[in-house]
Length: 58
Image (cartoon, rainbow, N blue to C red):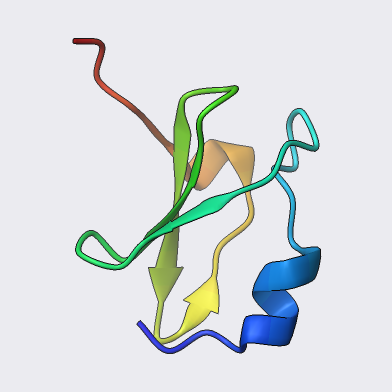
């Protein structure tokens, strides 16, 4: 995953506006508050709640 660091500094979760964390192994941006993971496709973050994956509990 090769997303511009300046972009990562300003991106927030579109659902709750919390800070996102990079999960390079899964190519996702993760919101720990909402428990959503937003995919990064072709180095472009897909910041749509409908496209996000719900993180598993436990």
